Amino acid sequence: MDVKSAGRTLDLFEAFARAQGPLTLSELARELNAPASSCFNLVRSLEARGYLYAVRSKRLYPTRRLFAIANAIAAADPWLLRLEPILTRLRDSTRETVILGKRDGGHIVYLDVLEGPQTIRYSARAGDLKPLHSSSIGKAALAALGDAELAPMLASLPMPQVTPATIIDPEELAADLARGRKRGYFITRGENVADVAAIAAAVRVDDEIYGVAIAGPMPRMLDELDNHASALAEARAAIASAAGEPPLRPALPKRTSG
Image 1 (cartoon, rainbow, N blue to C red):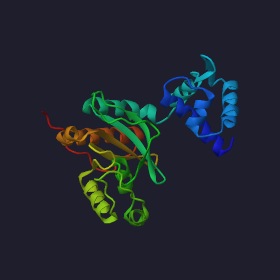
Image 2: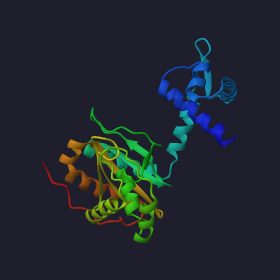
Image 3: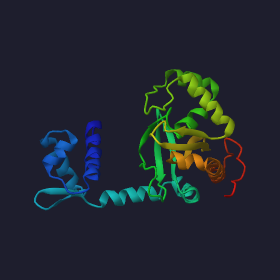
């Protein structure tokens, strides 16, 4: 399978996720912006492999085969299995969305997202890509670089204006990263999603840097900033312990009550 075919296969399943219901071949072709003949061949191949089935007068829908395979892969993930209880405790204690991410080239890829229980919350999905300069995990990943590597990275890093609050000046971002290093965590205040604040910290696992973030509506996050920062430090230390590595920064003081 070539790159284009692989991409089109993923686009097909994402189209079903958006539609939340069966689609005809012509509807799939429109969703994929592809010729009906190409979609026909793709659909027939996926039907033959047991990934699609026909329902209600020539409409198609995915079987649970992909779901079963995804669950099997996730269940065997060597790190998420160990980190899930820590991330779950962090989500439950803060009642905000918790994210595990990692730098992948010029972006952050979300590896796991545990959404908070509150009605108004930050929502995201595993696999989402976020910019380095405007996301809290991106800032944590940048700050984990050595100074000799960070300076040229900031000089060449694309910094689009994601929101009006996004930092797009390399010197300003460098100063923001320095403040984050000093306090032990990194903050975004509406820089990636308007009205959403997030804090993140980096942790080393098997010589690779991961980031853990807490994200939610800005007023609520900022009101609980100190408590969330302490909870984040505890989670980071627990992850470092599970990985057999020391935390990248000293733990913060214990959370205050009230």
